[in-house]
Length: 258
Image (cartoon, rainbow, N blue to C red; front, side, top):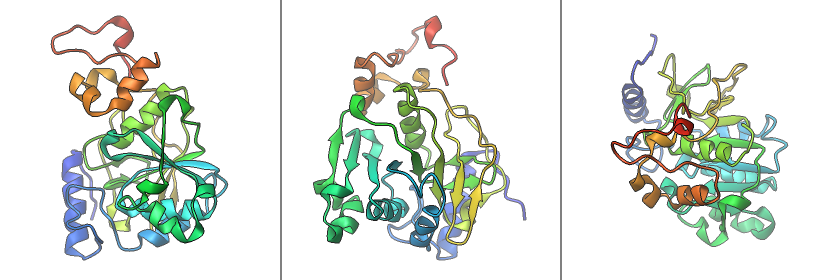
């Protein structure tokens, strides 16, 4: 049976419902409303690091969600420096350096709830280029489309790196097989997937969708700046445009950004 969705919200609901109904979700419960943890997340993380550039990376960015805890842990065990965006980007980015973490504390450092003592804040202007990215997903397609839980933070984090002048790098996600659907809508601000890894399968996308060149500032508001100081930091660095106030016409330089 084909699972084709014309709306991302319907894809999310279908995936969350199936993970719960088939008892494939793992703590935290319920899977709804979040990047869902899933049975086999550890095996998917181990499988991920069999593929370059993740297998050869020295620095990667990994999202802070539950199923990617195993990715963070495996990366640290391999000596890879891990950069983790704080939830909702309220605290910018943190660095986990395995050189500063005792081996018996790596699992703790990879945990979002216990890892703060091992994490170091990184100013945006000092954020180095990473070799690869790992993001969480709710639903994905085999041609490299994805949707998260609907708040756009993974896309925004990718766009921030592009605004800083970083080149687009391969993006992987770890998911359960039931999170793979046949079709999803595509938005120009969506980050493209290069690799999808399940506990049993590795799917390389030969022609990922086009990568966004930066932030679509027209979509952001003054409230977004207050809630995510990292955006103000980006503006102060001279690399971004201030979001428009309601009713304000877009200047020529702000049009067409995606």
